[in-house]
Image 1 (cartoon, rainbow, N blue to C red):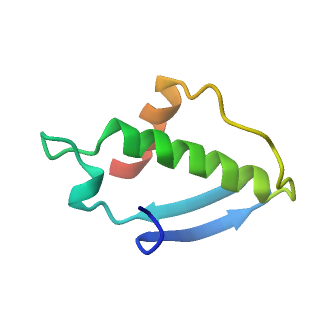
Image 2: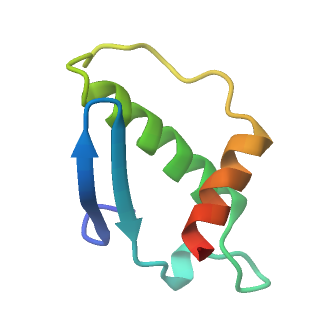
Image 3: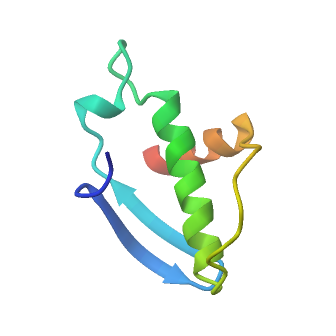
Length: 78
C-alpha cells in the first residue's frame, strides 16, 4: 500500500521522519485521510524508529493510542 509512495526524509537513532503521498486509497468516504492509514503510519513510524537503534526483532504492537495517531495527523498538516 505504501511501498512506492513512502519516502524516508531523515533518520537518526530513535527517530525516523517519512513522507507519504496521500492517494485516494488512503482516504475515507469523506475524502479525508482514513484512520486506518494514520494507525498504519503510526505503527510503521514506531517500528522504523526502533529499528534505527539496531533493534530489529521487537515484537508486535498491541496498543496504538488515539493521541499518538492524532499527533501523526498534526505533523502531516503542519
